[in-house]
Image (cartoon, rainbow, N blue to C red; front, side):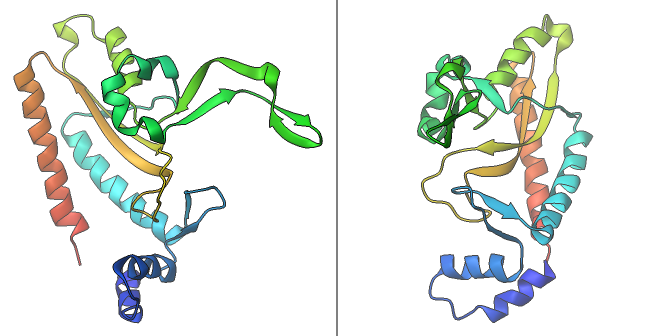
Length: 208
């Protein structure tokens, strides 16, 4: 972080805030644009910042009783079709897998027409739908509650305008999901976690 702060004094003559911000990221050697459209390569300095954030926040999340787990990167399209209202906000940003094999066609690789998937798979934009499906199997009675899980993963959203660390087509992500016996317990859990994020933001991320 000291390296980035030092660079800020070197780039004060940039014309706009976006220019200044990109100069900070570049000169601090945090990340660079990837050959993959809209994605970035997080370099050691940048990934080191992420590791410190993840390790510190992960400890705080576990102290509240959450357990880490991992869900698939690929989610059946039908899962999103069941929850059209939930998906509406980012339906246009979804990346979709339709084939499972490539084939040489006229000397170039292309999706094999004979390898089309029976059901398209969405590359995870968020995990609510597949986690909800798992909860429906895991929770059989009130004795199984509460369920408190956390996931560290990557997500893909096909952004039209991308900017390093602020919004890229693929980015690192943390999401918590819980199930409770009553709505009141759910609200209490929400407020508890908001306080965890607030305290983390003000005492860790705001450190000079």
